[in-house]
Length: 330
Image 1 (cartoon, rainbow, N blue to C red):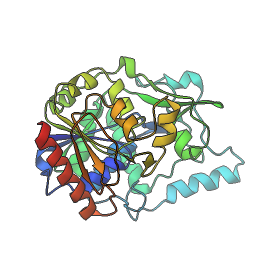
Image 2: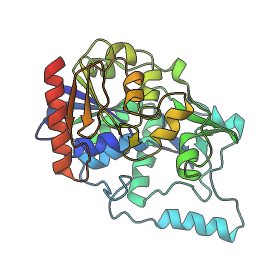
Image 3: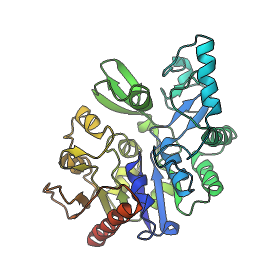
Image 4: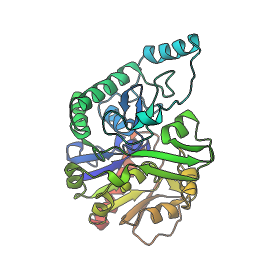
């Protein structure tokens, strides 16, 4: 058995070709939920959904977001209505009082659905409607995720990092904004002053997550700040990682990041944007998988390979390196 911690696109890309190395029926994926937002009243869980659609054979692998070939009639109509009615566009938070109204949620992740700032396909939206309705009926996010995983025919077990809400907020000179506003709505343009995981102090790991973390753990090449940071903010997770074998794949080649905003975010929270900075952020990691061109000298075992992942053959190569690293420390 092995457990992957997943967020963004890095770890899903690794999972895409890992099936022959780590049997899906013996693999658990714990997904980041700090990126979750309520958009037009529906809870969107981007990192859970990427794994859900990947393992269900539905993921759009061009964008690594949403369902391949999905229509967008509702999304397009929302924008037509906003234009025709002269309504505002772009990220629009619901009023402050509504950020904590209704079901128990973390503050500052509730957005208006008027001219929604995130592209949501029609089949994708059906997942969010179903998820939100089941939560409103009293089911936990863990239970709801299991139901959705069954609907998509997953062999891997998929778990949210917590049933308690955590909201990743990026602090900028323009004020704090949810990660999705900063990255999707504003293209990561504002300078990062700090990152906060609001609700993290009150969130706890579920029994299912703690059981999964008793197995060897793989931290894929996800963003250390906004994909792994929310998990580490949840009570019980970092302590559990310190007690089990952990292998991490660096999202950097020395100081060059493969993709996404990891470098800006790491610099914003005062960490060196590099493989060395990732190692410092992961004191619980017992070994690392680094790119063959990454000469970073670490104080832990290192397995090197080409960590570029453009297709499943690439992902399988990196997965074999991960297995080799686990064999050294497990």
